Length: 116
Image (tube, rainbow, N blue to C red; front, side, top):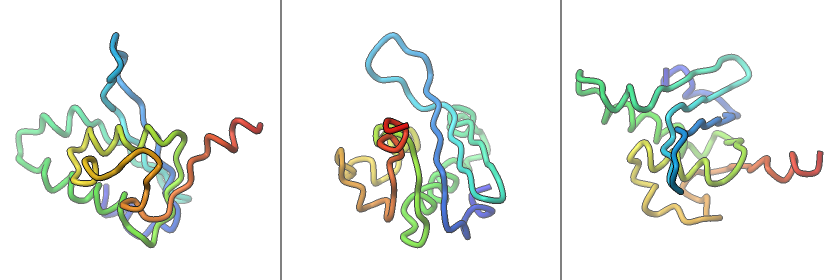
């Protein structure tokens, strides 16, 4: 699925979190949308996959998130942090709040939505 998204110029990212009674609710469903397709990733299922393909899947998802040729569009910067943490990506430890350089070009649509 990540390979099918690799040539996208714009990538909308959606994140759904588990309901949790504490401050950290891990990301459980990840959606990558382009103008031509939608790919859903069940993160708990990927992490529990017994084929041993999880590290390669995480690398491909990291490549999508850090591609400097792709504009990433998301709602809430915290969602990006949640995705990075849930995937176990290397950028998770270096990605500080309001510092999106490791992601390449990105837009947080929260401001647009607030104005509506």
